[in-house]
Image (tube, rainbow, N blue to C red; front, side, top):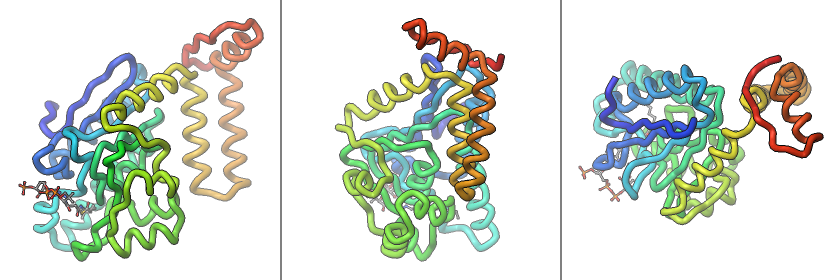
Length: 262
Ligand code: CO8
């Protein structure tokens, strides 16, 4: 598949997806969502890819939401199908085995915030703006925003943002715990890539186990989550990487992880 609405690249084991409809502030139309789904399948199928970074083309937007010109034509059934399609793709993004960083370089509204919230964490440029403004269109979030935003910022803040449609700055998003780091716009991508490289150098088995334990644990109670962690920990103990990591520490050298079970 050739891409017209995203750019996809892999450098040194780190994939980047750049949403690329700058004239529409990278809004999510059906074609873009299909390309994103295809790119995520490529990422999932390539064992050499160790981390994924998402960002937006241009200086103004990460993603300004679902494409309103397509939304305007929806009725209840096609709207439900559109929501289901977006939710499935965003669910796939969240459940990728590798860590995913959202490098939010401008407006991340509606579906844009919903994509960022499904990433492992978010770095934002100083000019980034987050929000779920669907209420101003007579709608509600449909790509998981009513579910993921309260889990990240708490129900009270999520209610305020969803009921008012208010946009928040990168700094407010940082304070709300939605964003991990705020960067100067021209430093954003390099900062995200540096973190991706740091992560990519860690053991693949442990990274997968950590992500699975965190994601599964967030959807359950503490005792069940700790059980999931124990199993994931045991899996790590059965890996060559764990032998290598512990031995390298004792031998006072850097570990060389191969990402294999023993
Ligand atoms: N869809 C389509 N086109 C868009 C979108 C969008 N979401 N956002 C911006 N554009 C277009 C504008 O129409 C404009 O196009 P043109 O130049 O042809 O007129 C161009 O991008 C530039 O935008 P503006 O001129 O408006 O730029 P401003 O700097 O003045 O404003 C804003 C920037 C504040 C981001 C403004 O563009 C805006 O409010 N955009 C809409 C944001 C929004 O409401 N997003 C939520 C959409 S709904 C959603 O995401 C629901 C997800 C779940 C769907 C479930 C399926 C049913």
